[in-house]
Image 1 (cartoon, helix red, strand yellow):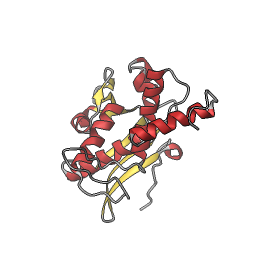
Image 2 (tube, one colour; image 1 turned 30 degrees about the horizontal axis):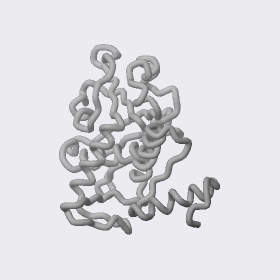
Image 3 (cartoon, helix red, strand yellow; image 1 turned 180 degrees about the horizontal axis):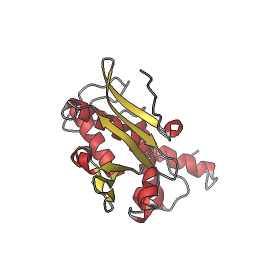
Image 4 (cartoon, one colour; image 1 turned 135 degrees about the vertical axis):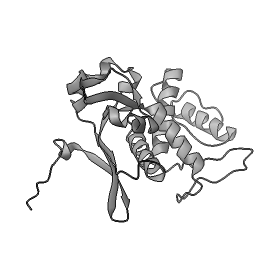
Length: 222
């Protein structure tokens, strides 16, 4: 029997996330961030429906599929975690999808929300849906608080009454968090540059004095 292989028209631009059970492919999703999106072709530019904040760095999720018999429980959870972690680490502000009405429940379980009216024809209706950075972070936070094992060199666990985080300073999610903190500090201080330094008040004084010396604003006690 002659079989033809169907190749997605955006295959060369897609990044695929897949879930295997041993050698059986049971779940997949594809990311693409080059415009225009396929959803743009259905409803026009998605920016007209979303907030400016969510449109800073968009991606489109396509080809979401979970094999029948695996659409509840651990497989869906793992696919959702992989999806949100990948999108979060890439710094996407939001992910959009054109989902079929038949799978609306599945999309909502993964955190997607409808942001525009359904389009298409009867029997083949599609829902424009979005998963925002806020939802990325909520999902990531849930993952970090439910997982108990980490294989990074750090962080060091403190007393529970003080603080504890499984977010390693060497991980991509930490880098994304650090960049957001820098941007917020720049906005609040109206400065051109900002740095975050971990240390005591003594270290803060040393940094301040070093800046005074570097800018030759006075000899002080040097």
